[in-house]
Image 1 (cartoon, rainbow, N blue to C red):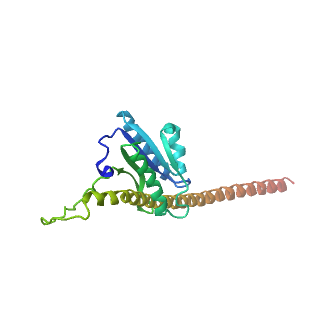
Image 2 (cartoon, rainbow, N blue to C red):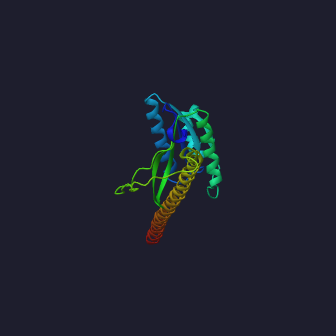
Image 3 (cartoon, helix red, strand yellow):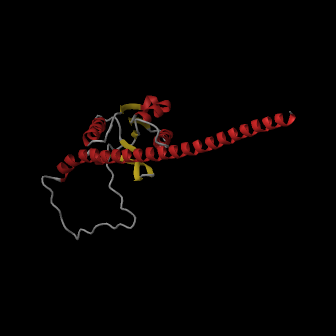
Length: 230
């Protein structure tokens, strides 16, 4: 199947940039856009054709300043409460249709992989054609013991059924991690803003009290000096 074998070329690349619709989440959007911009510039310098599909208003607004003519599709409003599989499948369907129509050879997704509430890693994942998962560090290949597996009806037909679903599932997983990373970044940014505001209030209160105390002291000195002069 083409979704795993590819087109035999890597001339045209589609970069899917997944960001948020809103700001106030620290460097979340900026980090993703920066990674996407670097990838696009790298591919362009190699003579490749670059197209962009943006998910999220912030990514579109920033990418179109430099790559406005390269944006071929945009999606926003995903997951106003939470990202659903149906929404992810809708985006995946756009990708599958574009690939079937020969509009790109390779599709790469840029998103923030969730690590913790305060940490995420901007990741570039190739969606189409599908890549075999790499072994994790220390992980060994499974020994099948020479077993022979038979597939019904055929391996080809099974892959034809599963690979389109794989695109949807991989995209859904990435969008969920992206949403979790966004919420974590926003929580951290707002917590820092609240803490900084508290520190500023304390500093301004101290300055105000010192100024007020100095004014009162000055007025007392003037009153005492005037009384002594009399």
